[in-house]
Image: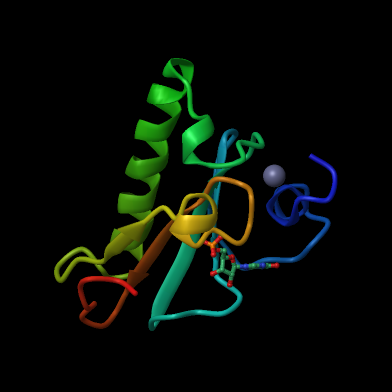
Length: 114
Ligand code: 5GP
Ligand code: ZN
């Protein structure tokens, strides 16, 4: 989708530090990390947000969560865990309108979020 920052990252038009890539997903470090480890997992296909997911996306979403888990393990988060977050639309605090899973780790997270 033209103008979408994460589509541009997927296309290589904006550089990123990639942690994992396959034919349908990409994991890369967040440019403004909120924890010692902070990366994003995105589908390569443009999906605006979680509310846009359809039944046909169930398997894709499962695989994205699996990739998030595996990449988190690779970043050393397997033992202590991490925060896996999907911000959705305005009340969810979403600022980039391309579905993404945040993975934050390397420190203890607080609850509830602001
Ligand atoms: P949201 O607020 O939509 O849940 O999260 C968007 C995230 O994308 C933010 O944490 C922000 O730092 C990150 N981000 C925005 N633009 C870029 C970029 O150009 N490169 C990378 N690596 N991360 C970005
Ligand atoms: Zn996009």
